[in-house]
Image (tube, rainbow, N blue to C red; front, side):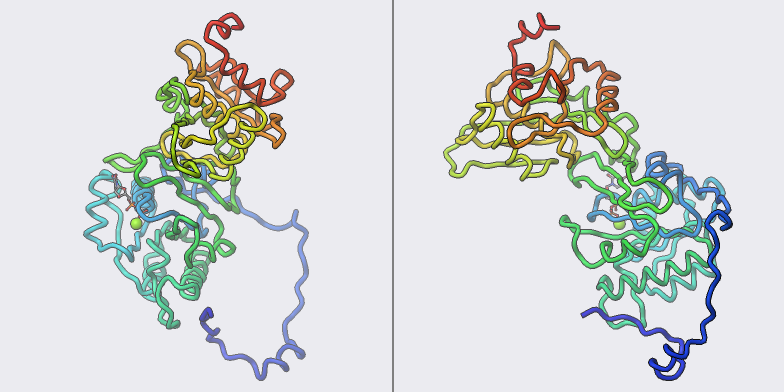
Amino acid sequence: MVEEARPSAPSAGSGGLARSGSAAKALRPTVLSEVQAPRVARLRTGIGELDRVLGGGLVPGSLVLLGGSPGIGKSTITTSALGNLAAAGNKVLYVSGEESAAQVRLRAERLGAGAMSVPIVAETDLDTVVATVEAERPDVCVVDSVQVLHAGALTGAPGSVGQVREVAGRLMRTAKQRGTAIVLVGHVTKEGALAGPRVLEHLVDCVLSFEGERERTYRTLRALKNRFGSTNEAGVFEMRDEGLVEVEDASARFVAEATREPGSVVLCAMEGSRPLLVEVQALVAPTELVPPRRMANGVDRNRLALVLAVLARHAGVQVGSADVFVSLAGGVRVDEPAADLAIALAVASATRGVPLGRGHKPLAAFGELGLTGELRHAAHPDRRLAEARKFGLEGVLHPGERLPHLRSALAAGLAPQAARDRAA
Ligand code: TYD
Ligand code: MG
């Protein structure tokens, strides 16, 4: 049962009558080409990766939902963004419902001078927050978080579906009327469930998702929905002592860190429209356990199961009596099927104890595996190859005429070093 606020306006007469004898006037539609659409300047947050994901900055009067699990860095990134916006001469406001003003100050101290100039109110009552926004009229306002604000008109607990919807609805009207860009921070659980962010997606203009593991340093920011830009963009950040730092060349970092030991291969992945090179590692260890363990970090478990089955059936790599661990470096998550080939190569290399790659360079690969062991086309092969070339990785294994099947890819990747040198 979801409680909703009743509209306060008195309904004209009985519902039935009002509907049939409607007094509403018909509208005259306008041809789109004649609709006035002034180009508004975007508000740049000064955080390059965030601006890119937003499609060039915040749009005045828009409502943005920033979702992510607790501790991922939502408060950190929003505080830094407000600090930059304030430094650039915009009026900003930080509404903290979760933490006291003193707690937010302690965080801001680590983030530098800009962040310390952000005005803050610590409040959880929705009416008070709306009144404050209307009085202050900031250009950008952050509400941290949508789950702790409480609408007095409803009895439900803060964070319940009815409350969250009411809070977001009211703030949206305020944003549109006052031209204030409002960023709603929302928590999601690991499963992306929980009342809250999910029920708001249709309402807001833009849904950003902050992903990664709290224990790891790398985080990705993605747009799941964007009325003012593409949803193909993703930004990579690193959590440091002085806050979130943009990682502009994540590929360079991951390639340099790749171990080149048996079980390591570089995957040419796509983060939205941007290629990203990331190391895939596999460990295959004999076990007495039945069934043996299958652990996947950063890739889908079911995908790993499929790759292992194809390896066993079509390439003669048996791991039936071994634990298999597969992990992506740095806490990166890749959900595209193009990761299959890299996973297969890493597992095969770990099983045989043969390193991939040539000389001091790691081997790079991408491609989807079919159930019959064939290698299938992956999107944007050119961009992936160009990224690999940029970091000096030649001989990338990918689907094509020369590599029609997983067997041929394994033969090419696992050939003894001498043979590979001859081939080169
Ligand atoms: P926070 O932004 O509070 O997360 P969220 O609002 O998403 O719940 O920050 C999360 C973690 O980041 C916190 O455990 C401490 C850490 N952190 C740093 O490592 N460096 C920093 O400069 C800051 C501000 C936080
Ligand atoms: Mg927070």
